[in-house]
Image: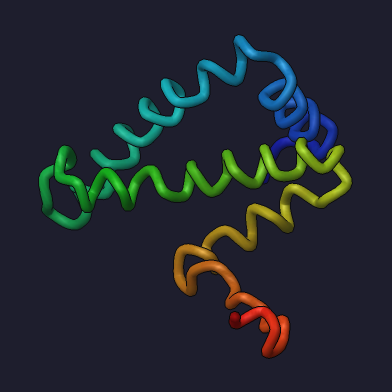
Length: 107
């Protein structure tokens, strides 16, 4: 991230706490996704409006949005950069496996 940590924290806080800012996020993500999809399509060949290209283009932005929401919901006690770094692992491996609670949990 190239922003100063204070600016990143303020951006995350505003997104979480100000309804007008929060309501603009889908529109902003969609616009960014279209730009990324065009770049992906230029490099790889498929139609930028194709589902696979659109998912590829917008999934990282969704990960960033959820990392920002997650830290905001937890009082900004987590390091946002660390959370953002974890997002690609979730795309690749899925969520962590559920921890077993023993035989009683299986009934």
